[in-house]
Image 1 (tube, rainbow, N blue to C red):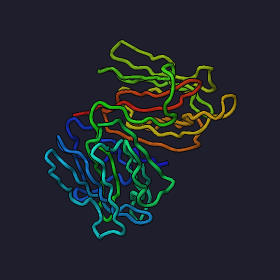
Image 2 (tube, rainbow, N blue to C red):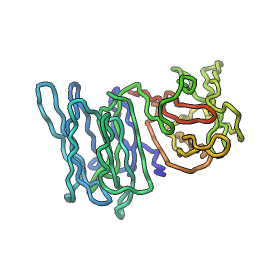
Image 3 (spheres, one colour):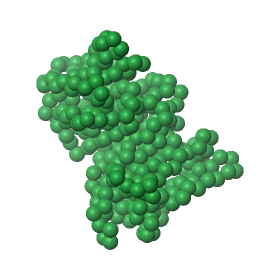
Length: 316
């Protein structure tokens, strides 16, 4: 699993939510890259220079009203590359997620593979996958741009998304009945003080407690329709906040075998990692975000936590 949950010092953009970084975590100003869609622009093309196990460079072409086309600088590829591929998006096609993996090109940490998921298809993978995978889905209309670190290669990548939005989910996908939907939104001025999780070889349920002054709010229990096994409580300090989650997705076992569920989860904060809870097995996921962006969780649940996603908000 790609345990990369820090944030590179890319300048905060007003109204944007930087999500990531995956890959290398620090570099000089000459290594920072950023591409943003301006108002009225759509992403028309992505040019990827890649090898068998590395992404060398990225370049983006946009189209504005009246057919005005602009192409960004080339990010990465200081010493050239290998194979150039072009992703051309239809006029009604937009990116709704990325997938990729992190690898090494001694002595560098690099992005080894990358795919762009749209509302029509998946473009890629480009490069070569490793076991250190990442994925990030988001809602239509949320993409603002990409950012990261680069030099000889694309060393790190993150995404700019619009406020307020949902990212995910990881786990079971629709269809599901309304009784399976769960949502916890952190009210403004409230601080998340506790997460209660019931877990065994998967995550049975989650419950959230938030506080503002003397006021305390505890959510209903999400999932765990038939109970669970081991109850753990995560208590957050007054200056502690969640800035990422990681976990795994697998099939349930036992009485209700074969269901897609969240099999393990960890909560990353500005102070430590709480977890993993459950059984680390199956397909990993990990997503970091900036301090102050967290606004809640949502997903699907029944006997177990079937899926989880995150509410994020922009911080100025």
